[in-house]
Length: 147
Image 1: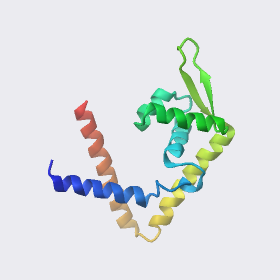
Image 2: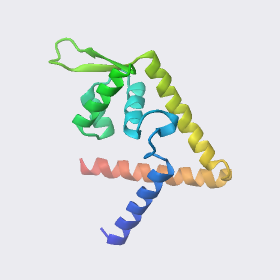
Image 3: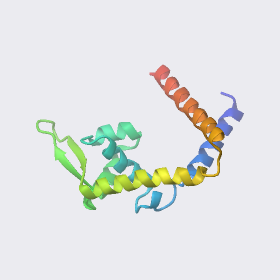
């Protein structure tokens, strides 16, 4: 691949992660980092998911996910339920306070985008979404070809 293309893609990635504020200490107005928020949100989207599945969904290291799960459990946001006959596999569930936090993340995420794009006209916003969809579809298609 052309080195200039690589540089452009990496530059966009750096810009976009900063634009989304993923490195702020209290991501989306929570006490969580981005990986913690994303983990909690994923459990909300997929109730009963286990840690291995979570690692696959988020493409994150097992030990890192394990630390995040332990922290979320310690703070009362999730519970674990042993799957009978599974040799230790545990399903992950949000507690009521965890559901509240996940909803806060969802609402604050929507509000973040609304706030950042509120001055953009509808036509330009539609073009932006089309470009994002193109990027996502292109990358998903490429991943399928690799497997």
